[in-house]
Image 1: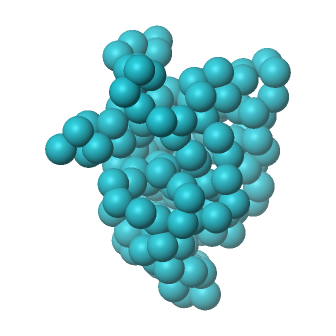
Image 2: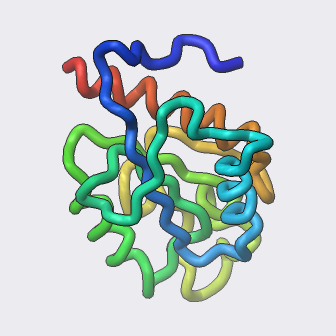
Amino acid sequence: MFKGFIDKSRAKSPWIMHFDCGSCNGCDIETLACLTPLYDVERFGIINVGNPKHADVLLVTGCVNHRNKAVLKNIYEQMPSPKAVIAIGACGLTGGIFRDCYNVVGGVDKVIPVDVYVPGCPARPEAIIDGVVEALNLFQQKQAG
């Protein structure tokens, strides 16, 4: 399931930041569940940070709307390169059930580039962890050159 993970002898601990664009909080709860002892995403050496200037990977939940698209873009631009972005849940991928609302722009990829898509409503913790592992591998490839 977690094949081809990062060679830890050459890599630093990846730092991840989570941003909620305006979800129902279902995906946020599942994302936080990944940090519990049951799923323990930190076993991969991941550090959860709150400052985009320190983050290597950005996890985004919820649909993008006209009020938060500038904030999302600003967070993305503050992250140092190389970086990876994970869109989590149906809302993060397409706007979900809110996609036809007047104030919704759509999924995360309407505003910033997305490297990994994790579907679901809400996305399951196992799927989120698989997406994080995939993003970490992409991040390592970007670092290598």
